[in-house]
Image (cartoon, rainbow, N blue to C red; front, side, top):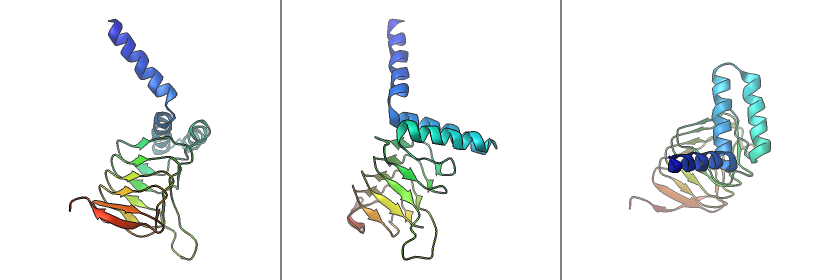
Length: 163
């Protein structure tokens, strides 16, 4: 009995004190509000989440199950971004539009099991494949195939995970 109570207390403290968990839970709530035509509440919750956690996760972005935001301060996601299951975002990540030098205005589409390192930027209408790792401070401007790791500015492949 005491072990169950301790487990519940630990879970509650984890949810209340981990800003990455808060960011994801508030994003899911704002997304639910948007899907149920509660637009004002959706954006209000997103705003509160931004102030509490430092992560800008708009309800118009679509993330699959298993989203993890590790150290959410500085994470900025543009509306319309689509990501698959088990996306991992580290602090300072930007997923958004690219406007300089291009007439295109599109947002990234990310596959399943993608990890984006600290400070990395994924800009424009690019497709990031499944099981991709994007290194810290990389700037992704072109499509990335499945099972690839990329680093640098602009990002370039360093290996193939299946090779």
